[in-house]
Amino acid sequence: GEDVEQSLFLSVREGDSSVINCTYTDSSSTYLYWYKQEPGAGLQLLTYIFSNMDMKQDQRLTVLLNKKDKHLSLRIADTQTGDSAIYFCAARNYGQNFVFGPGTRLSVLP
Amino acid sequence: NAGVTQTPKFRVLKTGQSMTLLCAQDMNHEYMYWYRQDPGMGLRLIHYSVGEGTTAKGEVPDGYNVSRLKKQNFLLGLESAAPSQTSVYFCASSYSTASGGAYEQFFGPGTRLTVL
Image (tube, rainbow over all chains, first blue to last red):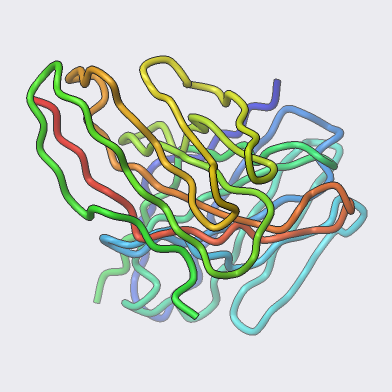
């Protein structure tokens, strides 16, 4: 079955860019997602990308997909303290359930 | 709209006790899910439901039971709690995935369960 991996921690300085990486194993995954979890809260969808796209940009967020390497990244420009959270990568194929990665805890230092 | 709500928010149980976690959604979603979140392991699917009266096993179903008697509610039961079930439990709901479109899972705020 699908397996999704992420590094567990990332620290950046306020104002810098953050890049959170994710790898997945199932090349037939159709949709790839980034969710954000703030302390004490549930997950909220940040953005998603369809497998036939290479890049998607949404304000400060840029998602890059390398299908050949099965690698997904989330870049946050001008990172702010409010971006401190856990970021989950998830993959899904048509009609299938989500498979989540372990989450990357982003710490933004002043 | 309240979205997805979970009851209770916190609970402490002794080994062997039973309890039921309640999830409710007001978005008329067909699909509902129960996940557990453990440090460094992400979210793991316990059980899910694709409609009223139906349930199915996820990745880690042992020790849990579920029921979906009404479309808006999804109950997760622990018949005999064990310390290994100490975790944060999240409920989620979504529209049907059968259409093939990208869809969003909406999550509740979570229930933090400790089993002593």
